[in-house]
Image 1: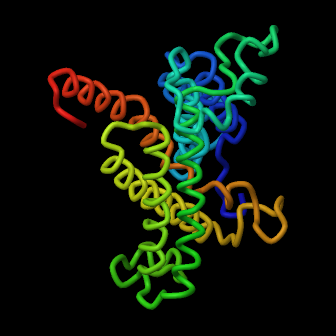
Image 2: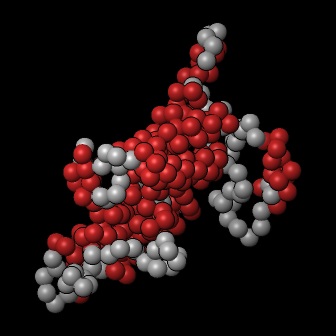
Image 3: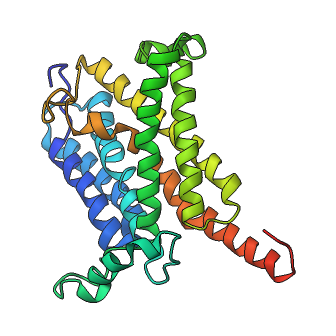
Amino acid sequence: MNAGIYPARRISVLGACATFVTALFAPDLHQIVLPVFSTWTMIWFLTMRRNITTISEIATTFTGMFYLGYIPSFWVRIRQLGADVVEPTRLKPLAKPLFERLGQNNLLSYLPKKIHYPITAGSNFIFWTWLCIAFSDVGGYFAGRKFGKTKLGAISPAAGKTSPNKTVEGVIGGCAFSLVLATLGAWIQKWPYWFVLGPIHGVTLALLGLVGDLTASMLKRDAGLKDFGDLIPEHGGIMDRVDSYIFTAPYGWLMCGYVIPALKKLAEARAAVGVVV
């Protein structure tokens, strides 16, 4: 508002929340939420405003729903994947007592059956994926401090101006940390071709996490903000902590819902004809 832009904030917040709710309880309707609330936004702008709404106000409203709602809500959809048939990971013997205590049969009776607790194939995927993203940030930070000499602006001027302290060496270090952890996670989760898929997954997560980080920095710079908030002392707001998880969500949904199952079928078909995977 300090910039003279007045988006439809309440509709934007409701739209963002609705994407998470439908992703959990009605995933078949998930894709229609954004069009419905976008239509509602335009009706509101046309009927409730005295002056002509600007493009900036429309774009800000839509961006709030899309960036803070629709994109990250794919993490909720991932959580539901593989709830019916969960293939045990290589860590099951260590965690078996906990699984038995927190099994589906002990779920509170009044909760919808759509909520699966505590373990699904999707939740396993989320756990290891979030570890990769977190360690990518950590690895990028320490690699940048220790070895960083080439500024990111040397290969991408816009990215360099968005985050002047980031270095190419830091990006490489983040990718390396994520690659190692993703490969370990792929082996533990028994992914097909884990020795190839794991490293690819890890590097992709690190790069998409960087995109999320730079996008948040771009928004803060344009708004003249240092942090998104002050909820977490010395760290800023919630968005300052989770910006790397935004653009990794749709990719994760594609990977967990389509790529890995397709490769499993391929591996099983090859095994059926005697080809060792």
